[in-house]
Length: 230
Image (cartoon, rainbow, N blue to C red; front, side, top):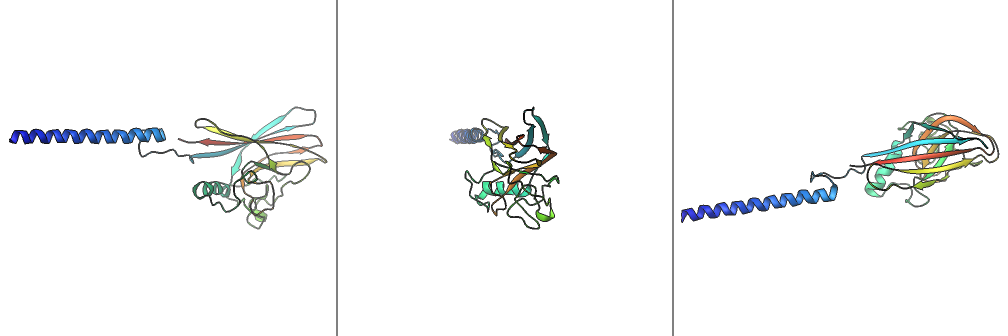
């Protein structure tokens, strides 16, 4: 009888061990299917890398394009706007729509480079401004956004991301000098066309070697947003 009890206990232990192994295996396999990661506690960090890159191509009327890329600034306030939109859908400015999203390209003749810590939201005050070339307000870049002659902020053509990480989306806009020579030295990626607005947010800005466009000259601006997740 004692022998029978020992054997039954061993059988129950083996069954319990197999059941536990099956449960753990299912958990790990389910985690892999959900996240692509063999660590069941792992997840995809979609916020891991958000980067903006800038390029401009200036073309004199009848001439050939002259392109340059330059380092740009991703504003802290712009990044916070994106973070709040993702985590709480309460970014505090305007509801995301066709007229409120980061596909608007603005221009400025301001040669003073912005810094990431300068506030880039809302109407212009002593410390903040959502206008291009005026990050940090009248105490920061202290410039002005171009609003006439073919350089007013407008939506660019958007190419969306697709496929696996890493991927990029682009916003492209071509400005044509309309009536008078105009100097440009900065571009911004903003969430709406209207400047001097309480709802304006600049995500990023880039300064480049100043260019004076003559009537008929064009400048093509390309903003590339790179998304990487794991």
